[in-house]
Length: 478
Image 1 (cartoon, rainbow, N blue to C red):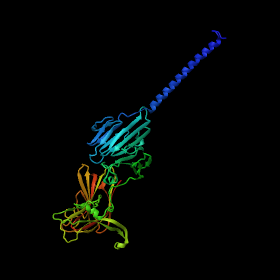
Image 2: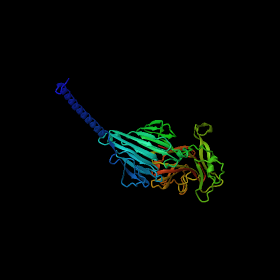
Image 3: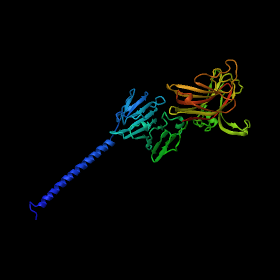
């Protein structure tokens, strides 16, 4: 039995004390290690938004800022206004066509906004104590935005992620991961959107909305509902309900019924009838009209749909056609009787409603010819075009303007006043060989650099007596 002075008992107390001290030391070491770990983790991964996440660097009247959790809009102030995480930029639909506002992010990336666009900076976060991570999430609710991401070489952070969200009521959330250095466009197509063209509205149901993604350079990975897609440079895709369309090249065709085959000749001409029977069908693509071009002009111009041949094997034999034209738009007046001493214009017009500014190139292509022409060149003042294409547009001042492609075939020398070629800035005169089909391809962006919105295109014949024809009219944007 151990006594109070038993050495074994003292030895047990000593071991217990050392065990307590060792445990306390190990606990202290573990607590210190955990504290160091969490401090290191916080310093490595702690995030916050930069001091100046973004700036609204250019804008026009009609651009508002909505601060996070605030209802009332704020008017931006020149030369720039700081934007923070959660802020939104709203561009009114009524502002002039073209880029209405530009947002510049702290890393040098920029976002251009067109009329009717809403952009929200959902997330702008960087690691607080190092240059490790950068996360930016952009949200577009409507309109058209072009995103130009800064290349990796000038990025301040080693791991940079850009995400684009597009949220439209009644449709799945679209999420796109964007690679650095790329240029991307997103457009919400809707019937009331100013960046949706007439040809695109014709394809939409009354309340339908589509989302279009375009990759000009770089790469884009898209998740939409249960569908996924990867876009490379020069490709586009759009939503169709809950699904994605197939990927296609970045090219758009903006003229409807380009082959003049969707309606009959009578149905096209019904658009010019004042009191039309309610059961009669009329074209909703091309609209026929006539206009006297001089005092006392007789209104006897005719618009017809005929067939033709672009190329024949021997140039004459009707049975030797190599390239038949099934539908040709023909403008005809005369020959007499009666004798025509003043001009009359026979025309067809189509609404385009195209903001041309997002496109690098806008090619108007067609084949045309002049079969008969009574007046010389383009008449006394150079504006009576036997075959004319008039562009009606809004210019850089948001004013209405026109530019005419004026084609003529008869070119004879004579005394002054017998026919001229216009030198006016708003007319481009082009000579054709009489009777010969001639292909045309004209970049309207280059021809009319002041054009911002193409409202409509009118194609016509004009003069005393004439027969001019046109086929396969396209307006291609790239």
